[in-house]
Amino acid sequence: MNRLGVDIGGPVMASPNELFFSDRYIEVPLVPGVVASLLRLRSRFGSHIYLISTNVRRRPQAIEILEKHGIIDLIGRDHVVLCDTDEAKAAVCAALGISHFVDDRTEVLDLLTTVPRRYLFTSWIEIERDLLS
Image (cartoon, rainbow, N blue to C red; front, side, top):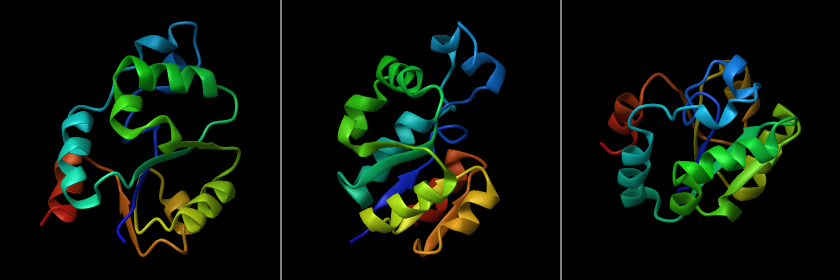
C-alpha cells in the first residue's frame, strides 16, 4: 500500500525560522500550492497521507498553524506526528510503512532507509509531477 509522508517545515510551512520561533508564529504562511497538491495527491494515496516532522520546542504552535490553514482537517490530527529527533522520524516512517516521503533536507532523507521513494522538496509542481504521473 502506498503511504505518503511529508515533512512540515519546508514542504508545508514556508517560514524563516525567525518567524516560527517568534511571538508572531501564527503568521507563518504555507508553501504556495501545498493544500491543492495534498488534495490532488489523495487520488493516489487516499487517506494515507501523514505529516511527520521533527519539532521539539514548538509542537502546540505547529499544530495551531496547521489548524489555522485547514491542514489538520485535510490530513486528520491522528496523521500528524511530531518527533523528537530525525532518527525518531525514520522510526515512525518504518512503523507506518511510509512508501514515499517528501523533505527539504537531504540528511533526513538519508536516514529514511525503509522508505523506498524519497523526494527532496523543491516545489509542489515537481513533487506532483513525480507522484501523479
